[in-house]
Length: 225
Length: 237
Ligand SMILES: Nc1ncnc2c1ncn2[C@@H]1O[C@H](COP(=O)(O)OP(=O)(O)OP(=O)(O)O)[C@@H](O)[C@H]1O
Ligand SMILES: [Mg+2]
Image (cartoon, rainbow over all chains, first blue to last red; front, side, top):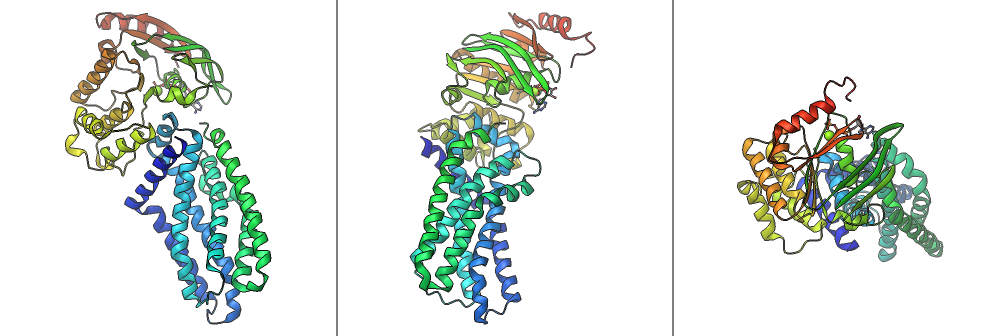
């Protein structure tokens, strides 16, 4: 039941996005601009410039992600559709889960498009283990979206939600982001230190689980109107 | 069916409902009347599980609102001022989504019948954002009864509807009455209230000021009792 409701909601959000393409296009344009502006600012042919790539990847994920997260609950304010979800016999946790899934899918799409684009523009030769690289990006995104979805619901009750979300999300997602940037950097720049990338990834995974479970359980109290 | 005991709702330091007690039996159609700002919509929101009571008990069908919210929600249909519809979706897509949210199966036929019932068959696949206020309200009505609720909560359902749509709405309510559905209608429309309701509750200033049975669509009785309670009272709000 919990999952069925969540899937219905996630499907609704993604179908909306498919029809309007509003959020995803904003996110993609933002990601594209970041990549292009940085490729102007730094000479992509210069090898030392490669060092900024791990940071750039996470700049894109965080800021493009914020654009999507901000919309995910404020969009339910139109015609008070959030009330329709609250009066429906949906478990609050399945509303959280549904929103989490749709946000995660949207950010993953942006990543799948923008990260290869970044590599191409910076002429980056990818030598790392692809599987571990993808896993790093995924667990980092997972944690960021878990906390982000929860806090987006919290801040959507406020009038200045667009400003509030980054402010409250920053301290909570910092550990994930530090770990993710470190793990990405080690894999892309100094693959010989792979073992420490693994320990960063373990740290992120542990943090992810705690955040996700806490948000999943506590969501009920955020929904209070 | 609905039992409310000394319900108090406070928002900030403002007390909106100041001890409401109400007992509604199954199958009753209750009109809730009262001046603007009396607390009618707030009362409906509390029953609809949108607002948590500050204190007091609400039991629905023997279930406690605090302990069994999910079970209660599946019995409730709620139609507030806002349409609760997704603008870029068509009536069909909206109803399809909400049928999933209410965990209904085999809904195709039901969705098409509902859209027929509210007279929008030709617009089944047009996005709701292109609809007029009255058309939106018709789909909103369909949305609120998609799961065959046992209790229907309507907040000023007649506003914005043309005569035909009022007819449709009253038909919907009449059909539900046959099936013993409990209906609460907040309205300012005495004529419609007298037409469909068999009991009237007048709310004033966060309290129940009057509560009586209405027989034979007696609009005069309704007006007289409303006036005696509300009018000539300078601090009605
Ligand atoms: N979220 C809120 N915060 C503070 N006050 C509120 C809130 N919601 C409602 N009120 C106040 O509660 C009172 C009752 O509001 P309510 O909407 O229940 O009135 P109503 O009887 O439905 O009026 P109307 O006939 O205009 O629809 C009003 O004075 C209103 O200002
Ligand atoms: Mg009202």
